[in-house]
Length: 145
Image (cartoon, rainbow, N blue to C red; front, side, top):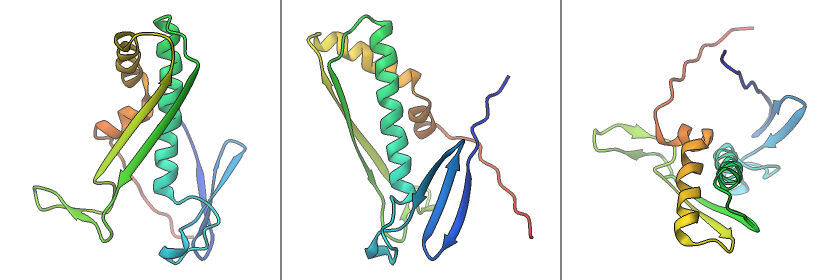
């Protein structure tokens, strides 16, 4: 049976949005240089935060499954976007990320080969990584109130 994740995003005025998931609320905004008030991260940053957090959870799962002990994990992610959008090889314009790069810093006494196995399994297990690397069917509608 499918499991649904649900959020509700509400415009507060100006450039501020509150997004609520279960009982957790996150304020999002644009930075000052984008005419925002900088009262929270912008949606693109939250997307990268979700990817980084999910990669850590996936690493923890994979390490446990492969009996690799970890002393520390940190994920650094960069998402490259082009102001005004960028054009792909088929001449389609895209406003989103052109490229996303990440690095996982692993503190462990295990070998590089063992950590590579953890890395490979973590990428297979991470739902957010999967969302980034394959097309996801998205549909939407609107209601006039």
